[in-house]
Length: 363
Image 1 (cartoon, rainbow, N blue to C red):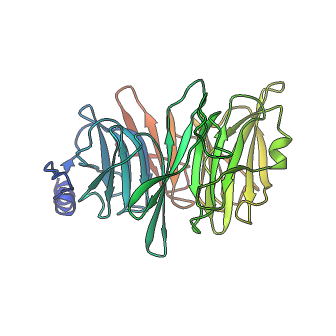
Image 2: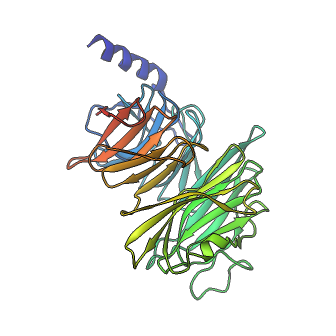
Image 3: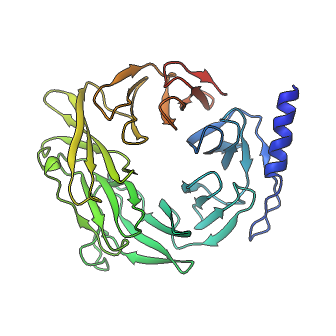
């Protein structure tokens, strides 16, 4: 009881005030209800963010004790949360369906709100020499598996359209536009603020692809990757690109409709995306739900109720049991990790400190 009281006092002192340009008066609330998270991101062993539901409303949550307790941090946002980006334990951005983008620089204590020309999409920010560079891949919503997009960039504190993507029956697109076909699954920029990538997944065999920019997002070109061309008869699923220690790692899986199995491949580029090679691959009977790349050595492939991990860049893999109905996992090193699992009433968060061999329930 004393320990819980101390935690409550610390959380109250740390997050007690919350003011934005819209004079938000709602204070952060100590979370006692059963959480219902759709996404979480731990920054380190203690600090993390989550997106979820509280009392029927979309909320942003924060933890400072490794996920044991959470508070809701109010943005006064109206509508659904359609996008988010968490850079570190202090800096975060939340996009609402009414076209308002909220920004915090002090771990959710204060939020600034800006009206923006998009209401749905993927956000990406980098800290380049002390200056925050930002992009948004504006999405128009899926239609038969296709998601048309535009690219916006933060220029002089104003969101500016820099690339108009292709729309069906439209002639206003940029020259050589990003195609409307396919779902844009991953969107990143490198620290140079010029080189960026969009991984696109399509339902047709061999049609998934990678688009690359070298001018900050103004122009995009389809990147020719010979390995992908060899998979032109496979159904290719793409996963999140990861830039770490000068390398880009891109996991994909390819379904063989004849053999009824999946090839899980890790592509790597050591020259900022100009050339790509296969770092490792393996065959598995099931489709990956998620693939999480921590660094050059530690990768995790989540299947239904099973986790495969490597701590040596794919040379060897180990099978681990995970909590039932896990739909998201995250590790911050080769020992400390979390698993988010769905239940009939919400979600449960589990914690491991031995590399995923055993799990303890946080809530």
